[in-house]
Length: 432
Image 1 (cartoon, one colour):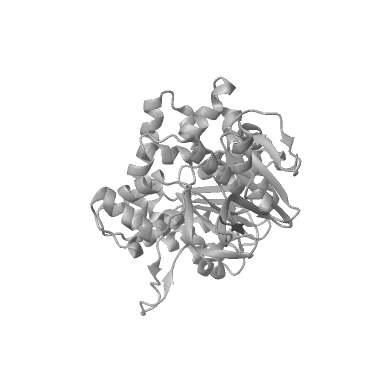
Image 2 (cartoon, one colour; image 1 turned 60 degrees about the vertical axis):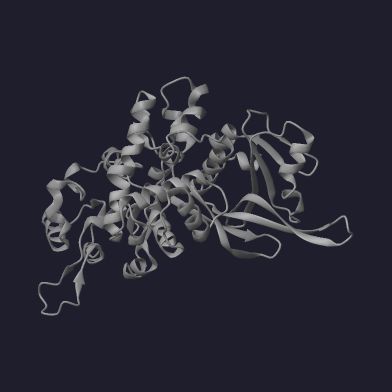
């Protein structure tokens, strides 16, 4: 069993807190396993009987009738026969519940959906409700408003390197190579060969993710357009871009003309499905966000690599993607930093220059500036990597994450240098 302690601890803390626990994340990242296996086992360990744990996987065909919200509510209420002890209700892939016309009204305007079911169940005094979903639109501000402030989100990610490392059944020295190649989708760990792992990751795209996106968003275009767009994004992971640039690249590579508005819509669909993340740029000195371009990262690097048939294994871009995901897992708000400064030219005039900081990570009053670098094997290379960091005139910590295993050290400017594996395995590594 892969022990997902961070998420289990969150569920335990939020247990019976009067809110509906909404567990989100990309499909096959382990949401159902977290609820139905790990959390179920925990509840048993503190004395909760199975008769008081109601589990319904709404994406399973035998439960198709419960995608009707009225049938779902009726069925769950029929199982709550004890008026004293708490019932723990697990509804997996809640977005499968349809919105239907209220059969008791002549008007077609009023619809009944999963929000109504959940709000109704929350009125049962001894019901503690947990739902999972693979679509962030289900948690839009409008939906959260409909929950009337009673929704509590728990975002589940593919395995972190720490989780992967703990479960890796092989020489631990090979764990990093395996992780940056195949990523952290839990079932990758049980695949034995490269062919098996590659097929599993490709099948997730072809048989689950793309079909879900097309069906959910009612996309009428050929599926190949989405396929090609994913390939373009995969090739440019961590690079500054925007829908117009992607549209131009798309046309030159595929020979197909797709407008930048359509590209933007499809990218939003990928983000809504937790397949990719969108990172905005932040002007450090100007203290403002820069509208465009952006950076896109995959929620799982193995999925990105599989899209490209493992051909583009640039470890610098892969490291950057993994660090971004790790910071999100640690619940930081993450932006791409921009530092602008004035430099003298040969004609004695001055010009404005922009330098990039890979990540600005914020959480509460804490802030970190982080650069990802394969190596700094020369002083010239080190100076180049920290050029943006030394131009930030505040006291927040600055970190350079390197590929190599090194003993962490600080330079004369207070910048921390640390190897990628230690950075990922030690959650307190940013405070060394």
